[in-house]
Length: 345
Ligand code: NAD
Ligand code: UDP
Ligand code: UDP
Image (tube, rainbow, N blue to C red; front, side, top):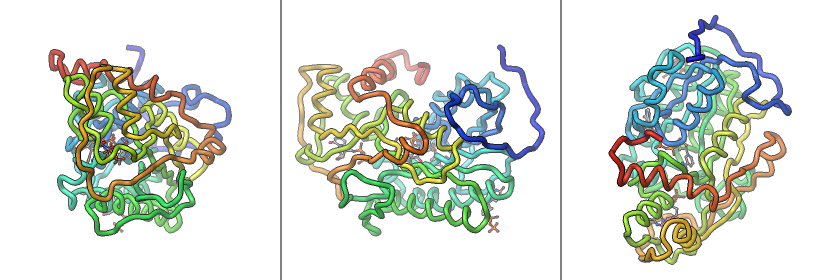
């Protein structure tokens, strides 16, 4: 392997402007924690950071994450995996913290709502305490759910949202709102360098197959020759971002000079019926559609305004839904029908 082990003196990295220099060509060798790094988004981020030459510590309690998502790094001395719950304090020496730990799909975060809100509040507090102690830069992966069932369309970062504080989604969306508040208070009060991303619906390889999210459901259903389950009348909208676009946005945000919050999402907006149609075109034109009752508090529409990220991060998504969907089909196919070597792609 060309990766040789390097010892890093404790240091505060000096962050320059991102400018036009590609991220890969910038200074290398940071020590980075990715909480939730064994999950869907986290594992793709870890791949990019390792490829760039950083040392990465994944902290994960494996609630929804899987070792299979990161095991291709196990023999790399720049990679470490710690089974740890962020609700408990953690002592590490690092330069940057990407804080992703939190179940993201409604099925998972509603499974144990108290645990979800603890993860968002106490877990984020602990990681901010860590950032403060070691002088690390801290990036929070917040969510478009902070806008709730939005009364503004598309959603701009300055919109304060329309969130039910006592509903079944509140553990997640109010939890993330509190996490944003904590990040801003550590920034203003303790001088922690923070970055806030508001992520819109993201899909791609390594998504949990049975996590109940609409893209993973439809793709798995089409492959298994089951009907696609459309909830409600299917006219509600979402905007679907391919995971590599998100990872690029997260890294630009971390390396850049702006706190945010920044919307990171693909502005292409689809109704669930249109999504079902794209899945039919991509996987099986004969796939049937079955209507099911919708879940409570389901936002009617969602679409990011990404002007701020375009302007200040020089970022915009590159992969359309029709291009991105086929890229996750082979991964799902292999995990559903394959030889059970999950995550090997
Ligand atoms: P995921 O469920 O695949 O990953 C979350 C990871 O966090 C998993 O590996 C899980 O085991 C870990 N985790 C959960 N609770 C933990 C705890 N208490 N301690 C340690 N580890 C814990 O979800 P994802 O889609 O990869 O989402 C990553 C982040 O991005 C989450 O914070 C999520 O809220 C945010 N986000 C994702 C989306 C999306 O569409 N995927 C949209 C908006 C926001
Ligand atoms: N914390 C942590 N790792 C650290 C530093 C702090 O997990 O390296 C936790 C700490 O246990 C506390 C939280 O982060 O629960 C907030 O820490 P902070 O120092 O801001 O607050 P205090 O400990 O003074 O309440
Ligand atoms: N949805 C659907 N069929 C499914 C799963 C979800 O029609 O099998 C709908 C759901 O009601 C919501 C949208 O798809 O309107 C997106 O749901 P998801 O759980 O993927 O994400 P979120 O609600 O968090 O945006």
